[in-house]
Image 1 (tube, rainbow, N blue to C red):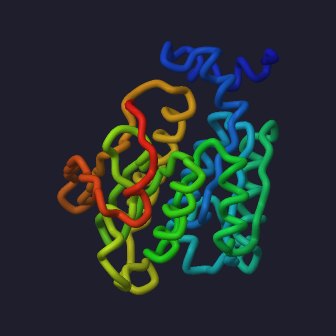
Image 2 (tube, rainbow, N blue to C red):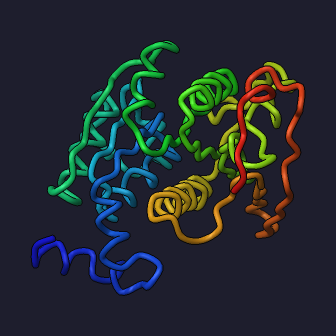
Length: 253
């Protein structure tokens, strides 16, 4: 690590839970971010500024004027551009030392698996249930930690899924039986800073997973009510009959 890097990351390196070794782990890591919208914006920006060595951004959409109220990695001149290209430009300005790879497409299951196998952590920043269930299924197959969040109206939630550890569930245990519910920002609305809160927490969970320090949200979910400014957390039960993770080999934490 050179002098400029020591200076850039000095406030993180000062933390005994990170130190030089932890910063080196961040610099060597690859994180796959699925969705570069309201959640993906703060996730990508904080992970870039924290020195994650490689970020892989996947999103098939282009920047729309309606996005700018909450998707802070984009700005007005980027309207009409692919979101991944817009985000990559912002991230390179923020930290030119990192590598940013872009995938301007929606990945099928095989392509998603190939990308996850090259990543250390997967971050789900998508905005629909079908995508989240697919991402979870592939993350379980690839055995990659999945940091998942969702936000709508004034409410949000965040969790981490590693069902091969102990008696922890996967996302399908939690939401697999919900069915198709129209819960997207375009249909229900969302207050912008809510995405910043949840996305920043996703970035924090990624950092903890990569440096191997602190207690993550594996097996737990936090629910946030932005109007009441209240958090509620509870442990997620594992479904022993889950078609995604019910039969996988598990080991102790």
